[in-house]
Length: 296
Image 1 (cartoon, helix red, strand yellow):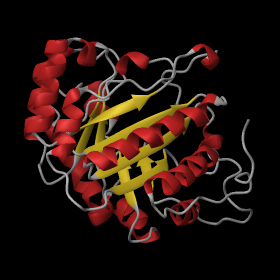
Image 2 (cartoon, rainbow, N blue to C red):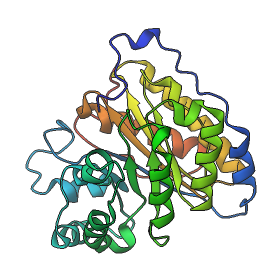
Image 3 (cartoon, rainbow, N blue to C red):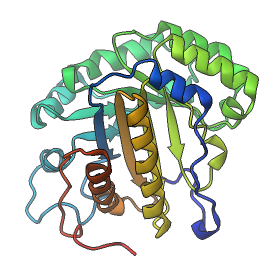
């Protein structure tokens, strides 16, 4: 992932902002004794991107990936709408606890920019629902130049989205979060329609680190900088997730990207170990021939 990439990450203040006041209120409102679900994964499973992760002789990359992680952020669906049969194959190759988090197709978000997209959305959903119970939140990622002047399109899209299918939204134009009037209207819309907002943690876009949940489901897309700071940044996230767990969060979806993606599994292994220790989970720590060493 190249979004938010910088040449000198050592100059960036990676301190996580304080939570918005609404985050605690939303979590406290649903707090009970249930243990929150947690899903951690990479963005892709192909061998070219995750070079060094797969053992020699691996015949099916997805089968091996799903034996190491419990989730995948499925970015391939952004570039093409796969037929139902492909989703059925992916379903059959993965264990029962595994979940896919597919990105909505670029025709919806980038080409038509949410304008008159009902037909293509229905086409997309007709295929993706073949993941059945392994379908996590579908996510919509808007272009950086998609601004609040098109708020009416967001309203129409959110209100027409089928309520039985979980949805998360990612906005990259700074005014969605840093114009207080717009931000309040946006979060009211998301909350009303049970849509999760996405938090993107990248080096070059600290302006969109809003730390404001719209429901009790966190969807975090973490972008490492292939720098030693990647580890301390993840330490901070573990501490924040521990707070959210205590406050009542129901589900955590955390996807680790890198500018050089081949290092994502190693960084994920570090993160999962920390989660298991600090939040009392027993998630599998992914293996891989490079997994026994620290990057920096």
